[in-house]
Image (cartoon, rainbow, N blue to C red; front, side, top):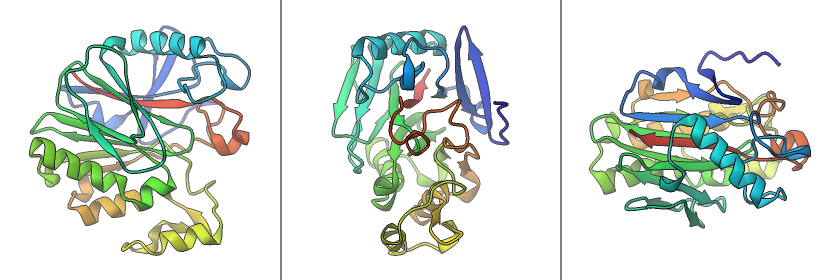
Length: 264
């Protein structure tokens, strides 16, 4: 499959590929990535760069895949903080870690420590990257539809504000990749839950299709972020199922992508 995107670049290092936001590459104080399926050791439905410990892939394969990816991305495994997600809205600060650390029951992380790398896990659910160029702080969250309606993106902004004194008007946010409105059809019950949100229904497409990045964009505008500081990915994980793991495209028989952000 030929990768085409107006918002993201595909990068290659050794045998590994990963995506980055074009509009974030100009900032020199942090690095970010969204992993693809390419470059790992896993087989079958996990082929090949599966980064999900919660899958039925062997933990040895996942650990090896992390080592491969971290070497290609240029970050230390010993300063890696990852989430063990539950589709909720808990967000934790990461500080003073000296080993690979798992935060259980958490869907978002923040830090202002250079060298620490945050990671969240995705296979259709939205990645939320958040950066403050003034305070030099970053955050990352996993926003499925449940986390989205709980406003985890807005709570990530609040966490950066309360922890590091960030001004929401200075925050830069990049949303995605995720399953797109082209593919994310939900039941009418789920649609009604979204309709309870205090935002315009610009996210509804063709009846029961949801534009998940648009919902989060609207919630972030309510939160006080500037529209020009919010970037929406145009990459749909289901449409790019040969490049990215997609839960819906495979009926759940799949590996897991990861989003990464690190202060340098």
